[in-house]
Length: 247
Image 1 (tube, one colour):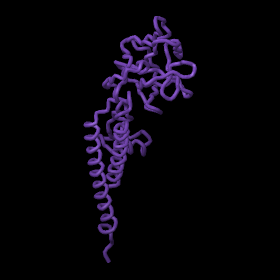
Image 2 (cartoon, one colour; image 1 turned 30 degrees about the vertical axis):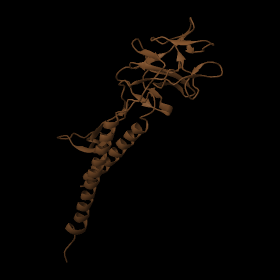
Image 3 (cartoon, helix red, strand yellow; image 1 turned 90 degrees about the vertical axis):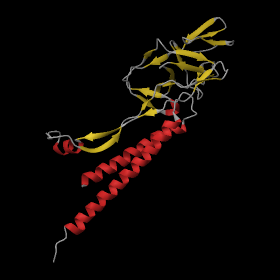
Image 4 (cartoon, helix red, strand yellow; image 1 turned 60 degrees about the vertical axis):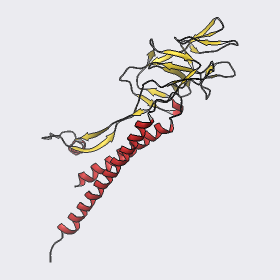
């Protein structure tokens, strides 16, 4: 009975976390380059038994004591490209990321709304340098052209090539500040991704799916809450009535 309470409470916590993740997706529907977060709910198999037994337990069968929400992973599917006509708006076609230098280290983003700072370096909207294969890219006066392979030209002069970073399929990408990511493994320059100048990539959030998942999470939360109430009522009955000693 105590286990039932634990299971129901953990299910409520998992569904609450799921709703928060979906809310984040919905709030970034209009954020260029945003990747929707994918996660699943799994159970803690034999968690409580192994904890109590110090890892030496030998269960006869499999038990489930609770559930948890997996660490969200970004959906790397392509978002739609929207033409802006601005020469410093760039969009990636493929699975790579722009590489950005920040005080906290390298960050990776699909948001290609770039500009020039006072030193004429190519920077993000909040002023961090966008890296090329040789470091920050400085753009002299003139007409800027970006080739599909990321080569940046001013008139007929090559001034750099964008560092488009791609990660292995099993890499864990974590969303941090300002629609940027960090990874637990090192990426490598992409050999397949392309760049479209004068475009930005829209968020790849599927609104219909997100709303459906939100409704499902709300329903699951309500069911887990009801299960918790039933388990609590049963425990109260067992303590106060069944265990009562008759005079």
